[in-house]
Length: 131
View 1 (cartoon, rainbow, N blue to C red):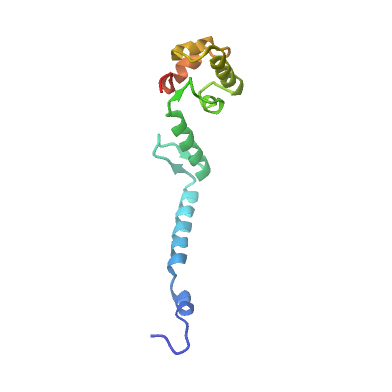
View 2: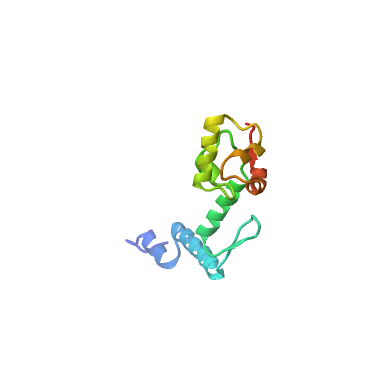
């Protein structure tokens, strides 16, 4: 029981942590633990990263690399995510498709200037012509 004219929140704050402060402290301790260790391990490939942003970006890149890309509907931005494909090559794929129509097979990419067999082979697992 509190003495007369005493505020519960004032006394509680002095002697214990309020729930919102406690939660904030828990997150601070967890973050300090990650920073103190200097690494963050992800579930994908057990790679180590020096900070949270690098780990987040790597997870995004990993997800993008596992997504199939339909070369008959892909945008330049999607095509750039392929290994060995930059802005100009991605644009060349889109331009070829606009001029000659849809690709009948992934191997038809060889007809696009800037695409070699090695690039096709590196990306074959991510490429499709089917919807």
